[in-house]
Image (cartoon, rainbow, N blue to C red):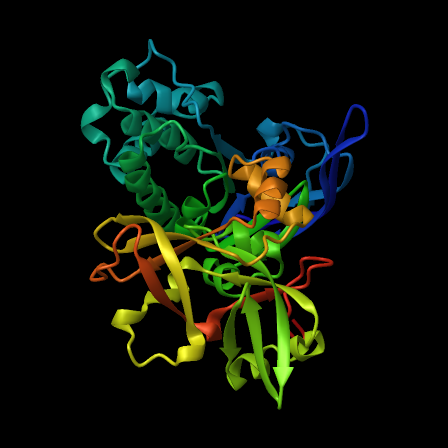
Length: 404
């Protein structure tokens, strides 16, 4: 096992395209680190530089205490798991898992020990004599993991290993990979586009946008204290609701307007975000997570100045919660980060700007499943204003204070 350090690592391709730009990151010994971000953001390129499958244009990659920029992949003592299992169809599970060790001329008894131990960890003992065509997708992925485990490497590198599995199996394999990594305590770098996968698996998560690290932290830290609008919008499902708003101050009390509706801020919000006071009378971007709404009928003691009125355009009852889709007349924020988030969600910048002109700001609230809100009805929703997020419209950075 070993720590992995990326020091100002940059990757340029032909034509001066920068895929990764001055990436600084310390991955601790035994840590499960997840790289997450939109397609094409550079996360896989960063992983491939650690593996030695891509050269480093600038900076250093360290595994343990040595710089490995010029070390061939086979000599880096790492093992990779890919999204396409790359199993040999004519070989049994046993032989697939043992293949790399045989090439390395490992002793036969040692190969047998490692393969059987890995099969036990993976729950694959009874499948060792089968060939890949006789296995399910999840079992094939376990074999691919087994091939990495038997190497007993310093680190595992995994590039979207679950993307070819169906939704139910992905959930199962997420927990399996997490359990295996925890048991083996091997430093692991895991690439995914799926932020739910990132949040449920990683000890820490590195959010990357256009080749640059936006924030690295625990899943809880990224969810509760995003450093900028991009991280706030990318992390969380359903994603955060955003709107342009004006921060107002009167007699020492602060509030913000969403369209023609006003929400008051408690003193606690200002004490936790002292820099917010500097924006009094100015435009800001407000972010509200869907989870921070509630049906007013189920929160009857909530103050009037924390309530929003809207029409429920769509109601989705999914058992554990109910999703309320509604439109606010609050202006849509148009920033580079908002365009990037819209593009990742399948909406181009032009469509986003058209919606902004039309005043169609689509919000989602997740409320208690006991809610009786009906589609097409006028609803009143309570906002937990202590958990609202605020961003500077000029640079998309979170408005905090106290050194943050």
